[in-house]
Length: 134
Image 1 (tube, rainbow, N blue to C red):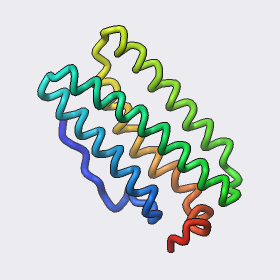
Image 2 (cartoon, one colour):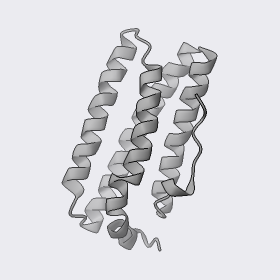
Image 3 (tube, helix red, strand yellow):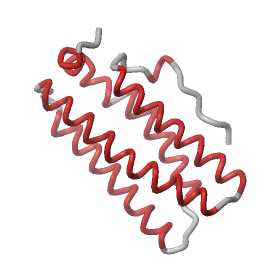
Image 4 (cartoon, one colour):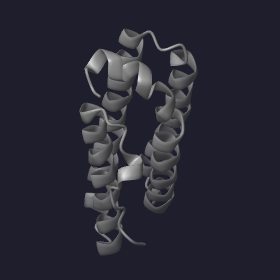
């Protein structure tokens, strides 16, 4: 599986958000590399890292949306909660000894692209106003 490249079409124009999204792309690539090497400890380490980071990122996005008075905040939070539940199930399966790395990798790749190009596009205009992004 090829590594994931950051591209202009993933940019929101909000520096803090783009920086966090880039970090998630980095985690995806680290997970991919760990899978290729067959290093189960590295895989577990990346899974924990991406889970913890994603929670922080979602909280940050939601805080900005709240500050901006974004009307779609509740719906966006539900999207985040749904994704976190899926991740929590995978973490449980991983902790039970199952190799969930490929499932997680494809889920992260698919979700990141669709979420950034889809749901995240909805709040950009509102959030730009409170972040001073142009």
